[in-house]
Image (cartoon, rainbow, N blue to C red; front, side):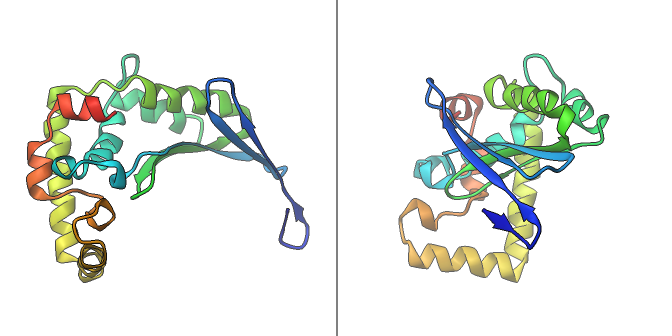
Length: 183
C-alpha cells in the first residue's frame, strides 16, 4: 500500500492461536503507535448498563494490580510517549505512541490495563462524577446534543441510538459488579 508519493507501507495481519488478531504496519518511522482494540463498545451494552464501556475506559487508567494511575502514565511519559483511550459504539481502544525501541514497555502497560484493572470502589465513585460532568457538557454542546438526538431518533430503542457516554440514570446506577461483569 502506498501512502503519499515516497512512503511505502507494509501492513500484515496475524491471527494468534488464542484468537487475538495482531495488525502491524511498518513505515520505517522511529515512532510507533500501539493499540489494543476491543470489539465491545456501547452497542454491546444492555439498556440498564448504557455507558459501561466508556466507564470502563476511564477506570482502567486509575490503576491495575501492579500499577497505580501515576505509574501507568509515568511508565510511558518518562519515555517521551503518550497513552490514552476512547470508546465508540463499535469498540473500545487503548493506545500508546512511543519511540520504536519502547514498544515492549507500551505493550506491557496496555496489556496490564486491559487484563488487570483494579476497579476500586473509590475510583468508581470519582470517575462516576467525571462522567456525569461529561454528560452535562455534552448536553450543553449543541453539536453533541444534536448528534445524540439524531441517533436516538434514527435508531429508536436500539443500542446504536444510545449515547456512548451513558445517561445520568445509568451512570448513577452502575456498580463494581456490573462493570466487572461487563469487562
